[in-house]
Length: 398
Image (cartoon, rainbow, N blue to C red):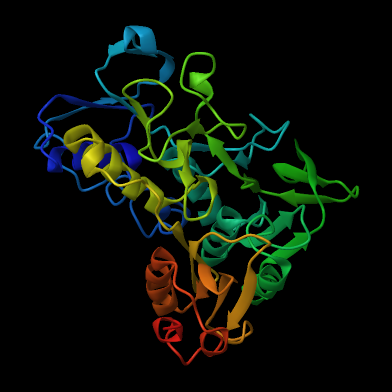
C-alpha cells in the first residue's frame, strides 16, 4: 500500500520523472486486509480480488517484482538488490513490516505465518480441511484468523501468554469483555500460558507445547505474536533506526540520509499531538503518509504540512466490527459509552477533558466523529460523552 500510493500520489501532484517500484514478491501489488478474511475462507480469489486497481502502465511506473533490496549505499545513491544495484535520485523506503516468528519453529512443518498472499494461499486448504488448528497469540491477527477458521468449520484453539486477549493494546477493563467473544464463537481461548515450542506429532502433524507442561495436538499452527519493521536489510548501510527497528523520520518523513524518505509500517514519526514518536502498523498510515512525501518532493517544505495523523485501524472478528482511532496511555481517563456486554459500545480516553482516543464496537459514527474531534483537540463534557444516546460531537464543551 505505502509503495503503490507513493507512486500514485507523485503522479497526481505532477511528478514527471521516472518512477520505479521495487518489490520482493513476484505478485503484482495487492491489498493485505482481505488476506486474513475473505481470502482465507475462499470468498475472494487470492490474486485477482486483492490486486490494487492501479494502471501502472498508464502512470508510467516501472514494476520490478521478485527483486529484494539487500543494502543501501547513500554515498553512491544506489540500492543494492539481489539482481544488481539500482541508482536513484530520490528514494522512498516502503518495505512494511514482517511477522515475528515463534522462536525455534522456523521451518517446522505445519507452522504458518500470515502476512503475504503466499501465506494465505498455503492456509486455504488447511481451513478447507476443517481440522483442529491452533493460533498462537490473541492479538488482532490471531482473532481474525480464528474468526475465519471457525467460519470455515474448523475447531480452533487460541493460546495467549498474557492473561487476556489484546493485552498489548487495550487495558484489562476493555479486553476482558472481549474474552466472551471467543466462547460465543466456539473458539477455545487459553490465556496465561506461553508456547514453548511446536514439534512434529505422531497422530497429528503438530503438537504445541505449553510452558505448564501440557500440549495441544493440531493439524496446523498459525503464529500471530506481532510484527516488526522490515528493515534488517538496512543494517549498517542505511538511515538511522530506532530500538524497535523502525526507520527514524522527521515530521515530513525524511530520514537521516539526504533524499531518502520512509513511509508506512517501516517508519516511526514524531507526533506533536501525542508528544512521542509513533510506529503505526496499520493500513490507514500506509495510505496517508505517501501524500506527505509526494507533496514534499513536488511542492517543497513550504507547501507540506507536518505529518501527524490521527492513527486509525479496523478489524472484523467474531461477527463484530471493531474500530480504533487515536492513541492512549495510562495517563488517560477511560470513559464508557454503552454496555460492553451489549452488541455495540465504545470507549473514549480523555486527558484533562481532551479526547485522545476512541475504541468502537459496532458504533462507526463514534469513530467518524471521534477522529475529527481528536484532530481538533476537542474538550468533552464527560457526563454527556458517557451517554451513548448523545452524539460525540454534541458532547463538546463550548
